[in-house]
Length: 235
Image (cartoon, rainbow, N blue to C red; front, side, top):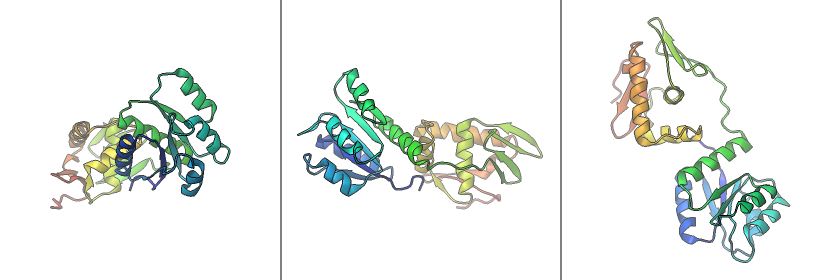
């Protein structure tokens, strides 16, 4: 699991949008909650104790600004505002009330997920690996300089290629699914689609071929990729 299991509270009265957001975010291993009574939002917030709140401005009873004030009087939990209104004052008001970010509807769900991940990473500081050098298959991988070197020579990688190699080495001799790699790249704010992942892995393998290491990155069709230490097939 790349993420800790964060609890998200979605304060959205559009049932269709709420259900789609919940489905998407649950697929990213977040624990997602909604509101059952829009007149009791503060009470439900207190009971759930979420790690992040996503709140729409236009709500029944009272608007999102009111509930942001109420939540801020009790908690410093990060808050992300949603708005279908095209008023710059909405964004200004949101930030003045202590919101962490703002998204204009309609939005792309990839943008929503990226913003949520960025806020959680910033607030909870959960992605802080410090290891910069790693030995793999007799080569030295420098994660900071984006290089791989052995007795044959040295090659430079792109940041995406380095990140992919790092994830594979961390799980060496185990298959890492394409989905896990894409999630990891998204978490680091490197916006990578399924097709882009294929291109990056192919380029990574071609670069490693210059050092005689390309064969140690294997594709497992329908499963993902594997970084091996020995010249085995692991079928």
